[in-house]
Image (cartoon, rainbow, N blue to C red; front, top):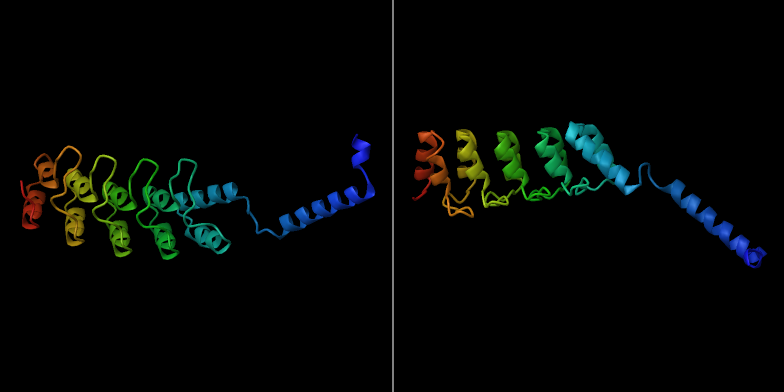
Length: 195
């Protein structure tokens, strides 16, 4: 049966196809294997290697690449507090309101981490200041909970909904009552928060 297949025409077609596959493989850019390139790209964003991130983008890496959990390059850079990589990704068109596999936006992550410069950059690129995490908490609520007065003021200045309620019906003002920071409570009330 195998010998019947091995006619000169079929052998010629087979080797022509193999040659075409080899030529196409050689013409592909380095690291064209999507998974390998994604892994290297994500690793570069996590370690803060902004020049490698730029280079990989110029070679065709997607700014929307994700790790095996589904976290985007941008959320990985924010979680790792890699400001320069965040800037490169945003300037290259990364989706500013992307989410981690468990539902956190880059702005919420930057509020949790107290990264004011990063939060400002994300807001300037159009981050949704009213986006919520899986529990209905906004970046403002997280900043209030952590007692970060500067972040709270930045988010208030950015137009966040001061009266947003989380899934338990709690507002940022309610959360502020338990932080021991009367200054934050005052800031929220001045911004129109109601009990």
